Image (tube, rainbow, N blue to C red):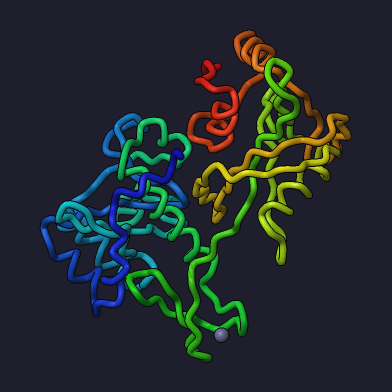
Length: 322
Ligand SMILES: [Zn+2]
């Protein structure tokens, strides 16, 4: 699946090494990815140039400033003798408090934020291959957890960062806190056999016109994945689902989802669109879907998404891009 090329070794056994990131920053082979508000610094002016992998020596100014917050430096892993770390810039690094040159030259974060080009994961993923896709996703996901979990969820107290950025600890209670991931199910819903086999696609209220995709939703507390698939399809489209089979997963760190992909068999075909999550839903045979995509009557989700993979998995081939 896109966004999860697990070639890089996360090297979890190294996270507890004292001063790990500080040590790695002193090694010439270490490479740094920069994260700012969920975006990654690029190696050139556009997303096609890919993610920048920087020499830590070139970031000495920023590195010193970053030491004031332990969540700025995160250990990502290693591969082929190279250690990878993320440097997370403060959200306000590109705030509009600037001098006449356009940049606050006294703030190394602001200088860095202005001098690099940045891109979100979804725009990048088409041009991201192999281990870099996993590295970039890991960096954005872990940075998002820190950004949203600075306080202890039990007592509201201060927390400190440990284990190369992989845990936080409540200062008052000593409790260790781990990065969270929110499971969501996403599914093709299919009815019939052979030439009559049809796929259910829906249009969500907040999507662009003519966008159709698979149904999806968050898993609720105390719910199995299979039950979540059946509940979501019943709630959103009024269709009863029988058999449910797992097809694969995709991290979706916007900010913390894990998409679990399923192929579901429909027992009924009558549609009752909820009008809230979904405003339209339709059944498509393979020739109908191919024709609708070709004419532009249906705009499928992009290639970075598991939704696209699931639809093409059912279709049996690649469908053309819009
Ligand atoms: Zn606490």
